[in-house]
Image 1 (cartoon, helix red, strand yellow):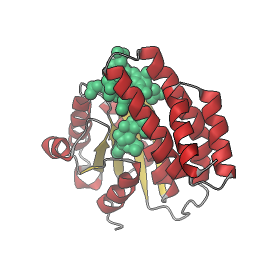
Image 2 (spheres, rainbow, N blue to C red; image 1 turned 180 degrees about the vertical axis):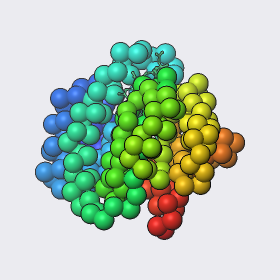
Image 3 (cartoon, helix red, strand yellow; image 1 turned 90 degrees about the horizontal axis):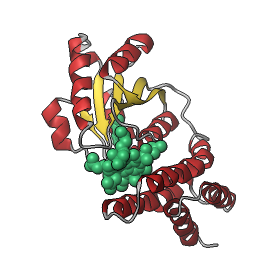
Image 4 (tube, protein in one colour; image 1 turned 45 degrees about the horizontal axis):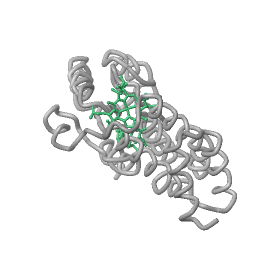
Amino acid sequence: MSDAEYYNKLAQAVIAGEPEEAEELARGALSQGLDALECINKGLTVGMERVGELFSTGEYFLPDLIIGGDAMKAALSILEPALLEDQQREILGRVVLGTVEGDLHEIGKTLVGTMLTANGFEVTDIGIDQPASEFVAAVEEIGATLVGASALLTTTMLQQKKVVEELRAAGFGDKVKVMIGGAPVTQAWADEIGADGYAEDAIAAVGVAKKLIGVE
Ligand code: B1M
């Protein structure tokens, strides 16, 4: 199978909601020497975007979102370890990462965590549906200098504002930076709520994180 055929089949497995097929394809792609990140960006993410479109137009329903997500997660369980193989050993900084309260979307957030880890950050992933107070508590516990807050819903973006506010109220001042992201999030929103940085995707998140903690 050519590289393009692998990407297309990975996308199709997500669209059709077939976790086993997705996992199998991911294994096959790696054994053919395909790049894990390319498989994610040109295959799985393309499929997931299509699932979102079909949901928007009423052709797909909630169960389709769930199985599409499951298929992407199944393939990522194979691909993400490959991303971590040439992990940088020196720790650049500690990051607390989570999806904000009321929001159950985990895939993009987890991918951001994987990319940060692969590039030298020590990431504490506090999970999904996390209130601002949990971000603050985790920062205190691990001594993080960067917080990443993900939101995939226009309604939960407001919680990113709360994360920024509660971190400021906790008195960390400029010592703890906040990076936000997620499909509906923009640089303008980051500016409006006083977040220190915004990243469009998991790759951009690495550059933004490095800049925020002053290593680039
Ligand atoms: Co939902 N969902 N969903 N969903 N879902 C969206 C987000 C939606 C756009 C679909 C649509 O209508 N087209 C829509 C939101 C509309 C809006 O508010 N603008 C939507 C909706 C409406 C809902 C429900 C309300 C549906 C319902 O119940 N009627 C419901 C809400 C549940 C809740 O959270 N309270 C819901 C539920 C779900 C599932 C749980 C079933 C499932 C998630 C499964 C899981 O995560 N385990 C799901 C899915 C799969 C999606 C879509 C189809 C795909 C999301 C995804 O995983 N993408 C999504 C449509 C879409 O986004 N096109 C949709 C792949 C992932 C790699 O990309 O998450 O964007 P993404 O992450 C990217 C970037 O955004 C960025 O980097 C990542 C990697 O490159 N990024 C960051 C993300 N976080 C970042 C943080 C950073 C930096 C960058 O710094 C900290």
